[in-house]
Image 1 (cartoon, one colour):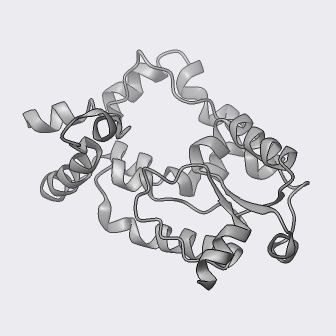
Image 2 (cartoon, one colour):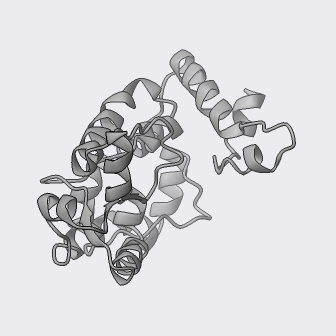
Length: 219
């Protein structure tokens, strides 16, 4: 129980792996520990809500006024702390309707045009940037276009592809393989390369240079 309480304070930045002289990867240790701990003790409602956030993001962002009631309705924050364990002292990310996937229909090239372009890139946008901080993803797209790239983004109908990070954060490692595989298949198809999303804590908003990926795959 003590180890679980300590690791709950870890934000999984992997900074320790880079900065520690011995290269201790606490983020990976946390994933492995949580998976075993939760398998023995079970998952809470909070765990399940966080893990399945990517799947519910599209629906909740369509009615942000309802999703944001936790921080605006008197007493709701205290209730969420009692029932879910979400501290009433902290506000949650603000839900918004203008997500990346609703705001970026224009300006992205087709798959065919991207593969044929002399300088191109594919932008893979994660759930958190795409849902809560759309400006980050749009700014990345703007920079790539300014650099002369023909830009394509990975998306699917009625939602977006997930890197699986939320499942790992909730100790539900058994559910990670399918979303990662689906995302990898799409990225590989868009770039004609072999990209393995084996570390979801690395692949957040990700940019892949298409000509370089194609060239590497042909070697």
